[in-house]
Length: 90
Length: 150
Image 1 (cartoon, rainbow over the protein chains, first blue to last red):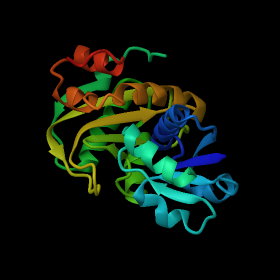
Image 2: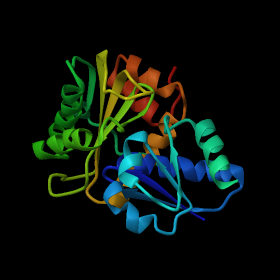
Image 3: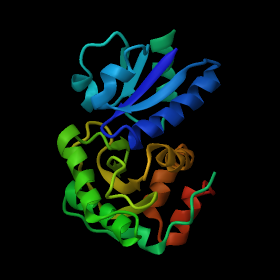
């Protein structure tokens, strides 16, 4: 299982999302590799990903993909992350 | 994991910003003042929002201003700005912003260490409000260290 977090620079906000997604996965007992990347490299980095976590602003730029694109509103809300990750993976 | 102590110059309390650009610029100036970035990095942070929208507002009331690592970053750094009056960034869910964090990293890996510390501190839902209402730099440092905001 591979999850990619996407933001504009591939570091700040996607980094926060990566850290928090890893915590939630651990709590859910799920194993996945989580990679943070910038939107410009999404085609390459997310080619083999099952899930892409991002903000609403990037959905259009991410475009067509085999992965489930999941929009997160509050990056620090572990309930929101849990709920949406479970729905995407389960 | 803890961060090097935030310098006084990296913390700006109750700043007045007319709009989101000014709010991000204050966070950028604080990074410049603490010796971590050049003014070009501040402009790059603003450009990220011009290019991609207000996605840096990652939680209610909190903007994480940042750009890519590069020549305009001299060291890993954070700045914290609290706003006297909340500012609209145009985010659908998380406006208005009361706290702007400026983030700079020399390399992506180093960047993530600071990011993990931020994630720890702000996973406490009370922390954003606590930072917004902090009346001293010491209080801001304590909250970022994950100490009880009260």
